[in-house]
Length: 66
Image: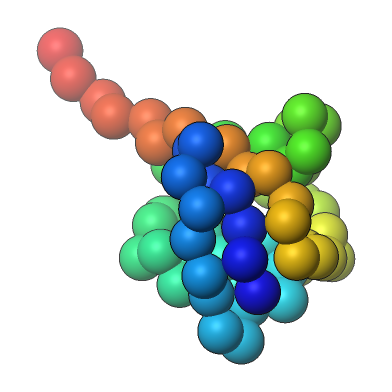
């Protein structure tokens, strides 16, 4: 499947939903915000939000500091 991830074209195998994408990228789902096709995906919906070829995904990773 080809996705546009943060503005870059990327190919993924075996990724069917937002939860799978976050896991495939090695990200902590508790520390990211995901937008699919200009709509924010609630964390509670990651596993049931399917992905299709050509989806535009934006992922923001939160970093703590002080």
